[in-house]
Length: 548
Image (cartoon, rainbow, N blue to C red; front, top):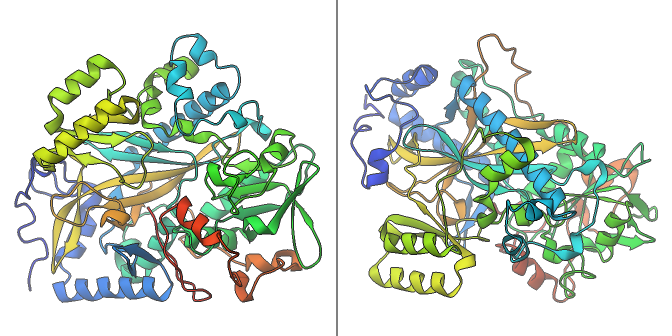
């Protein structure tokens, strides 16, 4: 029988790979304690059986419509058959650090949309905030119910060459990917049931209930039984699968902008039984497309007047408009100072060392060693615009240098982080591949709850540090182990689901069977394409396009 780990310790190409910590094997070549049982199970599994289970995973995702767009081709979302394991003490640090990060960003967002005391006290320059492309003056002065702006956060983490978790970037606008956490667990439960049963793995299936409770808790004052909806740009959006899954799992309506109308600073939903008031909008539409009164006048994705309704206290918008200023990668460099300023604390999870290219001395130093760094646009997402300079040609470096000098505020630079590696199926054997981690946190105004599991993204190409699925990466199920003295909740089961379009017995108006669109008005598809990475989805067939 062929050992699927044969050759695993051979050094892959690239200096980052040689410096990276392998999460499964220690320096002595033996599996770490939390990995020992899975290592043995995988080693004893014939390669043909492992390949068969990987094929089953792909078929499961294709049948369920969990697909993604890569180079114009619709493919099953790439879930690797080998899960990632994080032991309880490591996760306790992650949990504390992510919750702390959310509290810091909440305080910062309340400040910059209010008194701007952080500027007056000289912690962050005003120009850094006001020059951010995601700072919207229209959102200044809006006081959300319960003071919650970051209802859902996705904080991207990496483990460096010392094995320490660090924050790579913050996502508090419309973070996506949690649906794949849920789907990955369901798929792995079917494909590796014996391995899952041999570990005390924390479940993730309760996330929709936790999210719904947090959304209901942030309803406007005086609303005892709030109506919650999920606002999607529509079926052409790259994350539509996630929007529909969460709406079904929470048992709430999945709506588009044309389903909503604002009157008298109240938002209403059109149904076949008449208009119905909406109290909480979990929006998956970017700020610029949310309200044509204040932002893009040609947008048909949002609801005209919804920001005015939020300002008047007539509706809660989750996440709040204007959160994107906290996602700005230049603002990211100030988060350690913000933690001290707002909480009087050091960060539990530190940042990656970063050059602020708008500071002349830091820019000069970064440009002197440009060939060693990773350079990122401050408002980029999905891996777009990132230049890994050690892999760039002299011509590409010259072009990058010119772009940085032309717009220093638009860029940051960081050393190449040797992302940790996890065993990943490559052909018929297992090989180390670089990974990151996106834990998801839900804030109900009282407690920040971190889902005990997250989206592990994996670079499928040898030596690659790019983990985004849109750039050829894949994902893994993330197993957070319970402590020895910790009770484990009920095993993961699919969350109870009811079709969102028939919740409370009222169908949405102007919808076809199953809640799918009957057709787009002229110009609507163009708006979809402008908002996020998109491709035509098959209507009514349950197909989805992932975008992580």
